[in-house]
Image 1: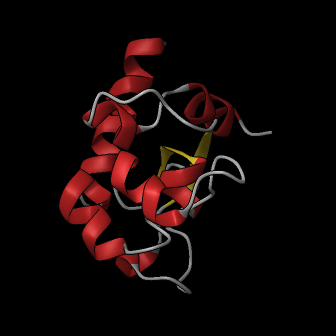
Image 2 (image 1 turned 180 degrees about the vertical axis):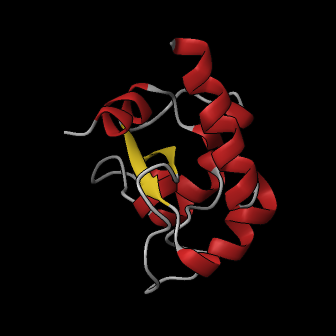
Length: 107
């Protein structure tokens, strides 16, 4: 595993932090894309941000939860509605800046 990947996964989810929520799932590394739209190429290894499984891929915590309930508690996920996610939690550049700032604080 690459060093940045390990470091990003060690950070808390940026969206959960913004809303001061207890993170429902482990942190994952979300790779930013050229143009910021699904299906496009990744910007490169230095362009990744820390998001939990819900905010990254819309993963539901357990069988009792629903997508509606997860959204009500944690806000929208990037996978469900990227426009709403970015309006709520920040665009790619903002998230990248916050991730890099947190990485600098840990080294």
